[in-house]
Image 1: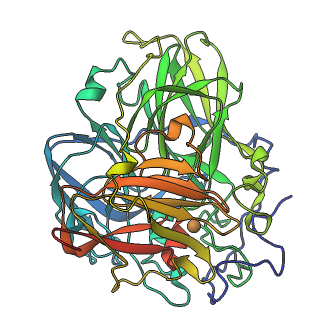
Image 2: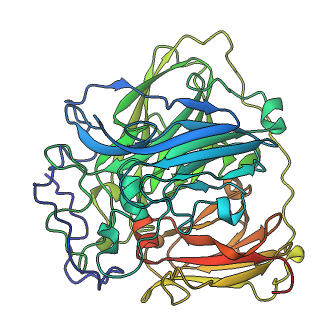
Length: 510
Ligand SMILES: [Cu+2]
């Protein structure tokens, strides 16, 4: 039997050293039910819940406490938007205006960030747009994004100091409790494509999360014997939730089905595929469609990344298969030994898929092409010769030798400029680097052209150990010399302890 306590190796060099103090968790940790490679026969599949759709120019969201049966026969105290856990899927139409009313009824200060959306800094919902308990935040903006899958989640910054990751006002804490939801943007390009588009029927949201629990069903943020000076301070677990349920099943028709996959986990990286090793087709990355469907048998998805895939079940009527994460083969390539838990190197199942008859409006073919993507020319960048550097380092833990300071603007960028950013990772673990404000394009990984499914619009890029990634980004439309956007690692516990920084986009000379 495996215990969930990760990184038991004593003396491991860990980035969180220096943080002391533990949570007040007193009940015992739930033991791992089985070896992670084995299915748990005691789990009776239940249907995949589909988050409610919210459509319209005015959207009301209430952050509130609740409780939900995340794992069978246990009620878990949770938090959610407009419900007990997670939140509704917001449908936004490019070119329209949207106003949101976000009410904080969770009892602690928070924010809500529109991840991937191209909005003014003041509307971004980063750490500076705090919503105090009982207050309502009312951002509004025109929807300028391309059709794709985005998401929303709290983004407070509790500040520095000991015990920050245990703070109920930290991002990692609040997302783990259940505060997250999907955003779907549609535009003329998506309208014109012959893709599955019936939400919940052939166009399915899949929000992936991993969790740990106490015996009484309460969420376990960190094990009782957790020692942040020795253990990796990451919220990871062996219970895998899809749309807030462990081991659900999905009935699809014998047709092409579109899966919109969001990794909303705090720290887990998934290496997705199907139990029969079939080929599927990625059609969109974080911020838009790819040029053409990219055939894949595995899809690596790090925290906060999204991918839309098409799966052709046309000849599978009557069969059952599984969406699985094939982490067995990742080895130590992304998460080194002292930081691993059992599921970083094991295969595990996420979702059972049962194929029934095709529906009346079925899409039956994978399109040959999708859209045009004009590469941002490197020559357009004002800093091609000296790319703006971002070093994700462990000692001191932060970016460019600094931890996040709410009072320091780290980078100033001129409105209208295009810049190349060079992200280097001298550590032994992979960090998913996210930039607020708008999508970017990935130029190179260690000098080489990235794989085809990364040659579209991105807002998170996984930077592997000892890797250098160059991205190119346009800073356009919105300037604000006071209110910053964030850049940070999207492992939420890394972000919370300070692997984050701030930039402003200024109108005029820098
Ligand atoms: Cu990180």
